[in-house]
Image (cartoon, rainbow, N blue to C red):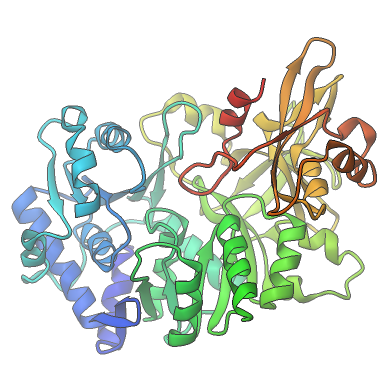
Amino acid sequence: MNLAEWLAASARLRPGAPALLRGATIEADYATFSGRAAALAAALARDYNIAPGDRVALFATNCTQYLEALYGIWWAGAVAIPINAKLHGREAAWICSNAEAKLALICDDTAASLGEAVDDLPSGMSTLSLDSDEYHRARSGGGDKVPVAREDNDLAWLFYTSGTTGRPKGVMLSHGNLIAMSLCYLADVDAVSPDDAALYAAPISHGAGLYNFIHVRFGARHVVPDSGGFDPDEVLDLGKQLGNVAMFAAPTMVRRLVDAARRRGERGDGLRTIVYGGGPMYLADIRDAIDVMGQRFVQIYGQGESPMTITSLKRERHADVDHPRYLQRLASVGVAQSALSVRITGADGEVLPAGETGEIEAKGPTVMLGYWNNPDANAETLKNGWLRTGDVGRLDEDGFLTLSDRSKDVIISGGTNIYPREVEEALLTHPAVREVSAIGVADPEWGENVVACVVLAEGTVPDDAALDAHCLNAIARFKRPKRYVFLESLPKNNYGKVLKTELRKMVK
């Protein structure tokens, strides 16, 4: 089925319900939201010759028009290519070209950047600004009340990976993939009701946007902050104004939100659910978050190739403080989501028993169709339906998955594997350490040495000996860093993930 049918159904059942909000201001109810999507679909076909299966890029900052545009694309049976608005214009142009996009929907914030890369765009590709009068006319016309029919295996969302090493790959997500992902949200993440407000403080082009579907299906509110992005004070204020807010946040966002709540002497009233994922959430950080803001957190582990759905650590697991393995579970990423099978495999592809560390593999209806026009990557990543994630971890006997690292980040020193996350977890329990990333640096004798790149807490000074002693109390001697490098900040990509490739270039 076409995912846009969920919007059509909500518009029929709850036409006057508030749908699209800018801050606390209602910009459209469900009847208007649905009508705009239908009208836009008609305009895409009429004015831009968009046919079912054609690709339409979205290179725009967060706004309520973004959601209208997504559903207009799907209503027409076309494929959405959401592109992070923080990318350089040439990066966005490369994605448009690789996907053979016929149209790019942009905004005033991205127009100049993409304009500088006009020579790199696909021949004949048009652009339309979501801020233009032309767009407002397009969404105001008439359109078919029923979306174009689509099958479960038809492509819906073409997601380009962050591409921290080489060119990004286009992950093909079907309507069926996204339906399965959305139903897993209900089973494994959180309940949804028409009274809820989905808050898009992270880019709609990525994980935050993927949670729109289930909230559309229930006729809930969709809120874009006035800032268009993440401001922790704004989020705390919106929680109190709107109530029943659910949001996705990267771990770095959670940390900033917790700091703001602590500073304000608040606990995040009105923020019912904060789903965190997309990067490592260290045990010290989530314990601090719960201490300051209470039990409103749910963790998910997934990747673009199985969007938002491999495992989850539900709210009740965060609250199960009396369980004898509570801290181990809190440090995990939870158990397999309802539609997924998860296993750990060794170097030869053999399935490993509980407790052993290896590559994480996942299988189920959320796993992508494959990479766009990339058979070599498909052959490497998809094996008999199993997604090889490239992540390293272990399952315990109860099915809880604990991540170690990306396979490419494992440090091999003296022939022994050292997982950076173990080192980072240990150092983050020291009060002087604000952020840390452990990397391997080449050594002629040992192969690699562990180097810890540390951002210190305000008011503290570098003290290698103190950090070394702290590590020796927490982890094996051979795992402790051979060197500490103190930095003002850690290099991160547009999604808040630390760029270890950049750290390796900085640290010799």
